[in-house]
Image (tube, rainbow, N blue to C red; front, side):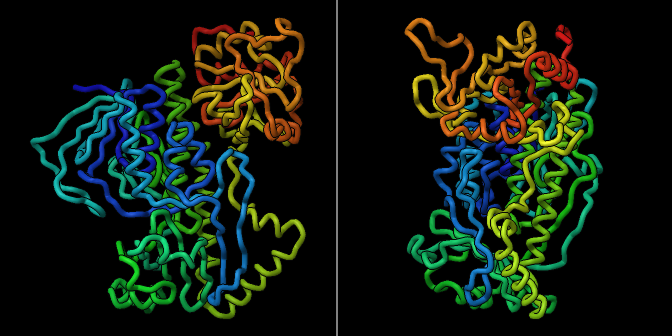
Length: 558
């Protein structure tokens, strides 16, 4: 019987990201995908700076980002093209653009190709999970060869081609119809919406010029026909059209109707229709995300309506959260109870994204003319209220990457504190003067950053505890404060990175939250702040690490 650290079920964006992160962290992984071939259709169209930062941790961000449309405007427009609201965020606090449009087949194919970098990650296509059982030591998974294409239904399996494997953990990233979730008997709670939309995916016959007049992502707030228009890389484009209760699904999916609707925006003779499908959507969350050594991620755990483009990104955040905790357990001896924090950290944010998506759907799909005029007036007014206008244009309603108080691994967050908050990522200068993104300098594990000080020296004997979990040590200097002097009098501390915050973005962020120079900032592997400390308070950081990760056999100064 083959044994693995983790078995991942599902080779969509969540499963691919999780497998890549686990592989980069040196874990042995088996990925089971019931489809013998790649689906090849676009579903997700958008990713944000948070997800790109996760891809950066996985070591694949630059390759993936090369195939994306970057910094496009996102607009809410009236039927005549008049702009109601235009969203723009030119700042890059995480070192990546906030707005990035993608073509999902490009992304998934590239991710699967890049998995070959990790020989200890094994991908098995055309394999259906038949059953699994777990005990105190691990999970036994039985899988079989599947036959045919099973999109939208359970596949047939060949019973005489079953195999059995053993793993410490099993993660179900197998979508909304998750076999793992249904086998566990876990229900999903929320709302299934009856509203129907027609999605039409296109490819220009002559390249991107067929869509050159549609350069931006538009929510067309037309009460007669609410529409979404989305540009994608490589001459691809997507339209979504809202149906009324009286509209026939068969009629809207017909070639004649699709051609008529497209003619409102493009020349139908200049495009190839790749897909035309009427769908409904769900806003639901699994009642629980973990049962012992079996966990759920992505659409298996939560399904987000498409109206803010966060469904795929929510799964990518799940993968980031899970991967470092599994590594902590399997490589550093952390207590498996830390996995309880996976749902407590991720569920509130995923639910908030679902709520925002439903809210945006409500704004876009108004089909009553009177209500539509009221909406337009309210949006016009909001853009003329000082303070509120900038908040709206920056999409300030998007949920912040910040954990709920008392529900995360880390020190308790004080008022205005940074604990449990995703840290910014500036471009810093190395000791040799070369620029580098902060995460690339720090690596994929725990990081202890001394603001103008040597964090390892500040921790003293407790430094050995952090070395047990593979922590990186770094001194970050505010701009212009690096030690200066005669040759031989000033030097670096061996084993401690030396970087300068050339823009002072990280330092300014800390100061806004009351964190002074001379403080040690601890970042978890997912770059959320575990806590901060200085002087005698540093022992509290180490004690919290030992207590919350359940590390044994260590002595801490308390």
